[in-house]
Length: 468
Image (cartoon, rainbow, N blue to C red; front, side):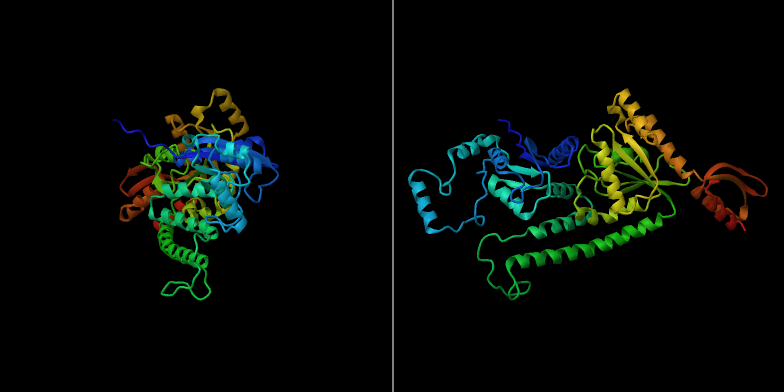
C-alpha cells in the first residue's frame, strides 16, 4: 500500500486594514503574507480581515471576528479570564463545573451560548487550521490572548520572517545573525510556564537572591546574545578585511525586494552557481563574483539579502555586516519585479532600507525585471513612467548583454584614452595596466611595449608615475 504524502500544516491568515491604508496596499500586504506562508511550507486555508481604526489591544480584532477566526481552528473564540493552564477558580466555579459534568458538559463551558458552541464546531477537525499567521507585529499579551481564544499556535509577521531566515541561513555568519535577531524577539515574550519555578535556587548559574525564573531566563538570553555577538564580531572583522582588499576594485551590488530576481541576475551576469529559487529570502549570504566574461579591470558583482516591508529592525541590525556590501559598492543595481502590481511600494521599501544603512546616496541603476511576464502595452507604459530604468528579463540573452553593457558604461564614464611607452626594464607596469585598465592595443618595438589604454585619469596618472 502506497504511503500518503505528509499533509502540510494548515494556516489561516489574519489581517487588519487600519485607517489610512489603501485597499491595494492592504491586499498586496496580505498576498505577501500568503507567499511567506508558502515559503514556510504552510497551506493557506482561509484569509480573514477586518477594518479598524487601530488594532484591538486585547486580541487584535473584535469579538465577532475573533469567533469567526475560532471557527477555523476549533477554539472557543473567547479569551479566558485568569492565567493560562490550570486556572484558579473559587468554590462557586468548581460547583458549576461539577453540575456541568453531571449534565454531560465539559468543565469550563459555563457561560457559553449554544450559538457560540455551534460556531466553534462549524468546521470538521480535518479541515481546521493548525496555526494562525497575523499580518502585524503583536505584543506578548495579544499573541497569548489569540492563542487562548483559537487553541492553536499564533505567529506574527516578525516571527514568520524570522522562521524563514532561520530555515534558509546556511553560512555560520548568517546563522549567528538570525539567532541574535531571534533571541531579541523572544526576550520580551518570556513568561512563566507552569508553577513552582520561583523558589530560590543555588549553584553556579542558578538564580540569585530575589531573582525570579523569568528574570533568570532573560539573563540567560542576554548572556547568549553577548556570546553570539562576540563570535559574529570576529567573522565581521574577516569580512571587513576582504572588503578592504576589494576597495580599489570596481564593485556593483544587486539590491531589491525579496524574490525580485537578484540571484537569477547574479547567475546570468557572473556565470556562478548561485542558488535560484522562487521563494522569499532564498538568499541570505552575500556572494561576490567577477562580471563574466571577465573585464579588465575586473568588475565585482555582489548578491545581497532581499528586503521586505516591515522587516524586523533586529534583522536589519544583525545583517548590517552583510548589507555593508551595498553600502561600500560603487553602483547599486536596483532590481524590481515589474510583474508585481504593488512594485511601486516595494521600491519605496528598498529605498527606506538603503537610507537606514547609509547607502541611499550611491549611484543607482533601476532594472524593471521579469519583463517576459508583461505584454507589449505594459512594457511601453513602464518605459514612459520610468524613463531612466531598464525594462529587462533575465531569460533574454540580449537583455543580459544590455545590462552588462550599462554596468561597463557606468564604470567607464570618466575614462580617457592615452598611449604609454613602457621600457622593457619596467614590464611590471604592463601587467599592472592589464589589471587596472582596458587595453585597447599592445605593440612591441625596439624601445619597449606601447600600450593604448582606456582608464580613469587617476589610474593613468599612477601608471605614468611608475614609469619615471
